[in-house]
Image 1 (cartoon, rainbow, N blue to C red):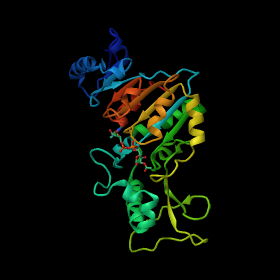
Image 2 (image 1 turned 180 degrees about the horizontal axis):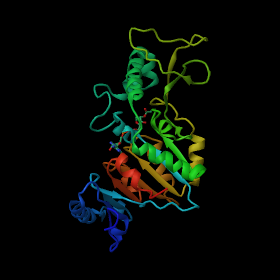
Image 3 (image 1 turned 180 degrees about the vertical axis):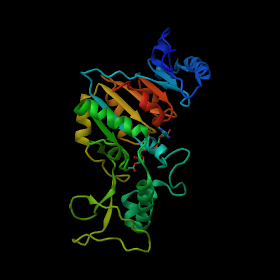
Image 4 (image 1 turned 30 degrees about the vertical axis):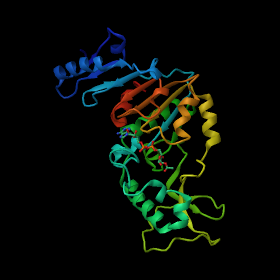
Length: 299
Ligand code: OAD
């Protein structure tokens, strides 16, 4: 034990495992570490013969320098709603899911917009208020730091429409599902524009100069995600793929990991296995705000 850190070196599991002893919890941490080490195990379902599952006791144990990135690597990061959960923005699915009384298709589709644009704006006005109050968490900051370190060797693709990556310092996040604080015309091809307003009923739907209605700049169900050319180009160059906080059920993002499978190491970070878990090389189970800061080692 040196400098408040216990590093286990004897087993392959232990090589990856570093136990931080914080605030005088040395002895308990040691036992937490050894039990965590036991939980580091190869999955035994057929689709995961080469996959490893790592379960972290996030309250004491951190994984340090686990994801090795060489000078030649190109890193593709895909984030989902889970990375913003610790910032107070609810995820879509599972516990804490957003607007559970409504199916998303009822408020996030071109059909919903045609049927009831006021309801759609009410939904996105609530989301704007929630997102405006949120602050980035250590997961966002870690990815921003990683971008500063790797520069154009890192491609950050987010399904999230909040601006927490940007607030944390990421300069080149690609929002494949749009941006909550932008709006656009539903008729003409005027560029999306910054818009932090909320439009709650009974407010009128704002209008474009062309007469069209102003809608959120969001990719709704049935619409094509944005920036797919750039995204697939980056996927074709990636040698390390990391997905964070996404349930792996919404396409095309759910298939990105399969796209890189032949040439990239792939990692998942989140508290539970995603639906596409068997496509990943390793899954790190825990909250991204707690795990991400310790996955890349000192930068
Ligand atoms: P989901 O709500 O489907 O999944 C969120 C994931 O985050 C789940 O797998 C959780 O286990 C995980 N999670 C929860 N808390 C976490 C934490 N603290 N750290 C890390 N992970 C955590 O969200 P997405 O997969 O992002 O699309 O959903 C994809 C798309 O479906 C969204 O972009 C949205 C939605 O329909 C559009 O709006 C177009």
